[in-house]
Length: 300
Ligand code: NAP
Image (cartoon, rainbow, N blue to C red; front, side):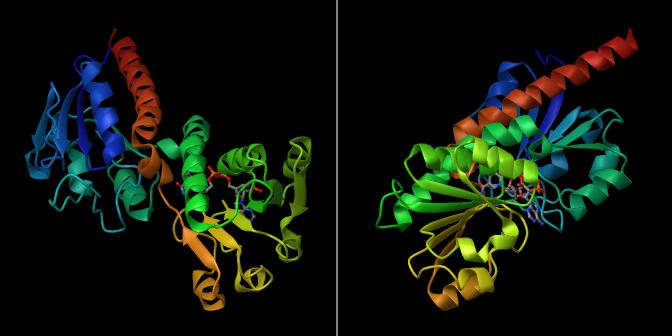
């Protein structure tokens, strides 16, 4: 249980609802900022404005997956309130308080560093990233079906990158009957791709592997699907770019060539917000319990 813990949940989308539900079930006391348009009420949680929050009593702050934007703005889909998280707010937190987000950026890194508060980026954890790859791939399949007039079964699919998302994409499209090839730069990744029964190619040979590709799914967060790479693709190729914004595709050139290229951010939050929220909530609760136990032991 998280009895006695005070947590501010600031902004977010439908994923946050599952987090709020589980935290209240664990008896944490919540202040919800950016949820005033949400009809549902949670026992043990009160809706507040950002300037009503008493930061001096918060044990944790939970931000949306994106954290903040470069100016400190926190996204919320349940409010029209403009929520800005500042260094001054974090400075008021108790020294033990933890700030949770999915990812970060220079602004959020900056204010947490300068205020000397701990920032936990949940998506940097392998467990979260691997669980999260499941709804990501389900969303990818949905997009491919929506944007093609041919089956995934039997099509030539190129997956770029064999990280936590790439593995799940490659394996799932293989199980749907696609002919999957995976581009990687590390020799151990190419060995793993071969072991999985897939075709491995080096990213230096990317262009020559695009000649007959029907679907190209990028997971590499750097400019990799360049104009030159796109110029080698057949006209009907669909590019789905899963890499974090701005993606790894030259979208301008793809449009010029008439190739459909789609940047597909935050798929878990779109196709399976409940599951995506559960993934985050499970890890959050585990981390909060560990922190609580550590503080109790230190006080004993
Ligand atoms: P990851 O485990 O770090 O994997 C990234 C892959 O990209 C690795 O294979 C890595 O290879 C490769 N890579 C990185 N930089 C490269 C470079 N300069 N040249 C060649 N290869 C490079 O990351 P992940 O968890 O799979 O996530 C991949 C991307 O998807 C991230 O941008 C993440 O934010 C995004 N994502 C999007 C969604 C969505 O809904 N669209 C959901 C989850 C994640 P090496 O090991 O050789 O570096």
